[in-house]
Amino acid sequence: MPATLAKPNARSVLNQLDALSFASLEKLMPQIAALRAKKHPLVMSKREAWLKKKVEAGLPAGTWDEYRRLIDRRDQSGLTAQQQQRVEALADAMEQHRVEWLGWATELARLRRMTLQWLMRSLNIQRPVHG
Image (cartoon, rainbow, N blue to C red; front, top):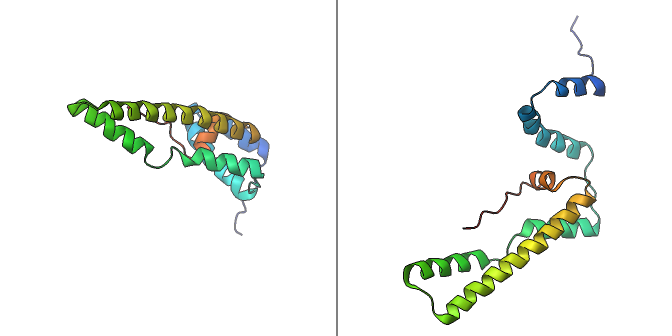
């Protein structure tokens, strides 16, 4: 007779999870979130879908590249007054975008009832590293 495995109940699964180290639990959480999403697909409101699109979009195309190119030029040979003004305008625009992004991401996290850190993990968003 083949042995049948008993279907685990939530309490026994939680007890097993409780025995894991923090690091192991952290590694397991994205897999649990993916399993949850598979079993209960997320139905987003229009606002939530708009926020997700804004959060995932990042900086407008070319902004970071133009900024880096001007900074490299400044470091090598200096900038004209017009180029320096452009660097300052780009820096201001990037800072404004960061502020707006944080607002969008925070609102999306609140709508999804999760922390900003978990939202970023669930969307696979890395913290930006700017030179």
